[in-house]
Length: 314
Image (cartoon, rainbow, N blue to C red; front, top):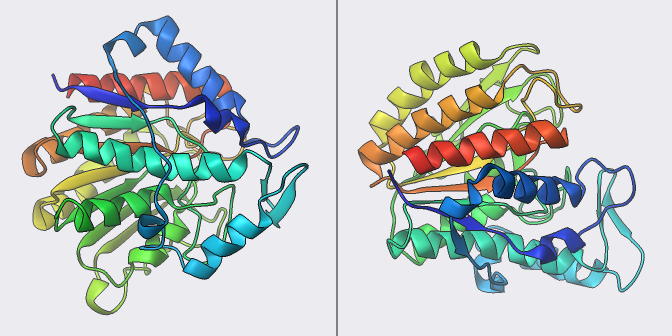
């Protein structure tokens, strides 16, 4: 069994996009409560996040975009960035801590303090493009972590597994011409944000290093398991990643209100095991998992608990 870390900070709760918004602070409150009540929390190593440094954020985001985020950050009220995404007074700090939580997780993994880390962070990140906020996301936490692992810790090949029900358009676009990053995504299609066709395979030197598996509404544990075994495992065998990063959305759960897929908690545990097998074979067990979506609070908390227990068992 490996050692698993948890990144969490109560300041993540201070990002608030308003009453009724599905990406609410209650998502993290429920997750932490579940981990404590189930006894999982007692098995985890706490990792304190830090504020991500601009030097690392601008490895994936434009300096102009970062400046605009700082400029728009409100002292009171809310500022809208796109139809789904806004900032409250606590949002910029939360976003910097979410990205910095992933960086702290990478540091802990590379220092061998832990084998894997789950980042219970918000705002999520995988829709954030290099130059704009989108789909509840301000900074692309996973993309920033990839570049940090490569530039700070000297890793050459990083695998991103994005099992959020929505396609990670931002992550794909940031790395689509880069053969050092293999981006693998399962997602409901057609669904927000409309990207993620099978024909999107990367471009230039990165062609073939983007693998999209569009899925039909209603598909669940059996279909996901088959795809991970038949598509992801052989791709990882060829790529031989030195680090695996999971964009861990739990909105493909059968009870999620924003999608129509059929995964269960047991399914997430099984996918975790498959990914952990890849990491153990090629990447010295190294996994960073960062929270993305998941909007039924009960299903989200139970799925995260199953996922984290899967990491603990790896």
